Image 1 (cartoon, rainbow, N blue to C red):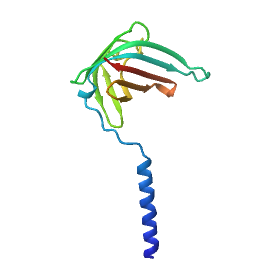
Image 2: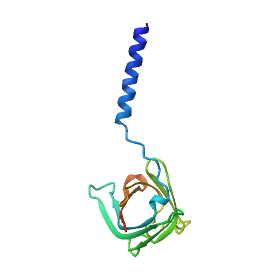
Image 3: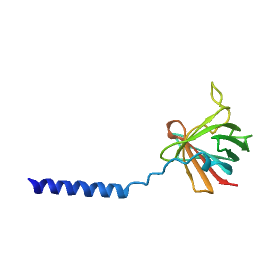
Length: 148
């Protein structure tokens, strides 16, 4: 009986060690201070209609200013697809960040896209990459920005 229990314990430990070794490293949330600065680059809007294999793509050059006090502002080419906006942001766990746009209309659908909602992000000290998804996973929002 003791041998069987010992074998089961060893198997369980081996499985846990393997699973831990194969899991992605936990990335603690970045502080607002580490995300501060001016970033410029492209906003890319991707839409795949349900009845088509073709992905529609629209791009705009934007500038994102992020402050240590957790405020942000979007400027640049805001005449076409992306709206100029401003608000606050909160870095979260597992490489997420949430933007609260103060200019987002309280009712109806905005004419242009706003930096608002929850995004996956990565930041290596030079490039800030944000990825968000729209309803029904047919829309993807990507920001590929370089720190100035």
